[in-house]
Amino acid sequence: MLEIEQELWDKGYKYLACIDEVGRGCLAGSVVACAVVMPPGILIEGVKDSKQLTPKKREKLFDIIKETAVAVGIGEMDCKTVDSINIKRATKLAMIQAVENLRDTDGNKVTPDYLLIDAEKLDVEIPQLNIIKGDAKCHGIAAASIIAKVTRDRQMDEIDKLYPEYKFAKNKGYGTKEHINALLEYGPCEIHRKTFLKKIMNRQEQLRLFSYASE
Image (cartoon, rainbow, N blue to C red; front, side, top):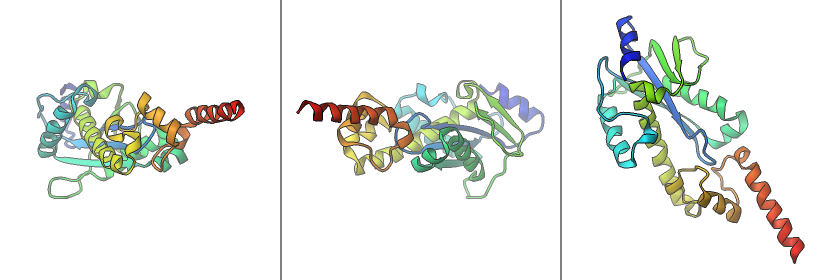
């Protein structure tokens, strides 16, 4: 999985920022992006698309990646931003923020000289390569996907304590049957993306009107 990075290292690029996001399709919570700069030639065993890993394995790799990386940066756009500007624009902004937040282990800012991005193209001056299914083809992007996933999952675990009725610790904000049923029963909470709920809430309103008409 180092072929793409190795070609760029051989061309003289030093700091390759590999970028991925998580939470794009969720009904609740933020979209979180991660940028990771890995040392040239380093391949961490077990790193692959975060969706193919168990939570326990992701947590273990999270620590290894953080310890190994030259720099890590996190970007985040909350549900209100997603509703305001749409999920695609929010995702790109989170990715750019992640690049801007790249820091080494001493807290020093690291400016990448090349970007490897999962699918998206960013409006920045840094040269970039946009890779479809990058988390399956590029080691650094897979590493970024793990950091982003664990970071967001931990956020949702904390939010679950505020809104236990939605079972966010279990569904992480995705539209599971259990989550949708909770929405129909309790309505949306503060961290739900209102623009993602129109069909669901229309269904709730139809059920309410049907119930009223049947009385």
